[in-house]
Image (cartoon, rainbow over all chains, first blue to last red; front, side):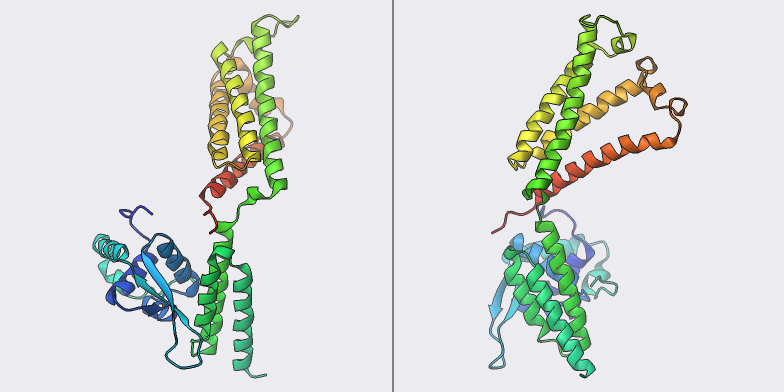
Length: 105
Length: 210
């Protein structure tokens, strides 16, 4: 991806959600709740960000014993810079940090 | 069976679809999506989440697909391009033969296109032949090898249409045809060529599997 290019509203919302807690690993469902993105939109974006080296993902053991591990996500250093850049160039700052109401599934 | 159990069963089945549909390079992600379903407290939300995951896996499957990797598709595309190449060869041979007075009967309409246009037709035909080789060899350059001669062919056609003395505008007019349906064939031909270009463009962009 050309990093100077403006991302979609959904990607910007996801980057903003990840940027809120840049050090902590976040679950897909939590990100979905925070951004208002449905899983059908959220995962392709996460995959693209991962492919571009903007997102780190790993399996994290569940807090409750006996539960299988879950996939968690965090921005890389490059991803952090990119997310900040996107937050700045966004023309609608209010919509960036708010959940997307009409997100596709 | 309660509605909760039905929802849980449905979300499980949908997740099975996700695992089956996801391309091999996204296996880890399919597993991640399926694990997340188990953590959703509401059964209805879990079904909706699983439905979204099906959509995501279908999307990933679609963009990872390479239709030209299937040999009948590849052969079909090569055959169509061969047809275009033969058409261009035929056009150039007929016009050049007429210009060189190789025909016993002189055809004035074939005098209209300048020599460079016939030469361009030969170049286009040769480029199409190169495209056939690249398509059969599954090269990523096949896209440009088809697009460039197509653009040359269309510009040559546009040039002929712009000159009334070439006879092409008259040939395309309704006065020479009984119905509008004669336009179906050139439109279908153009659509077929565009479909091939789109397929090659898609294959060019498809990620290389890990």
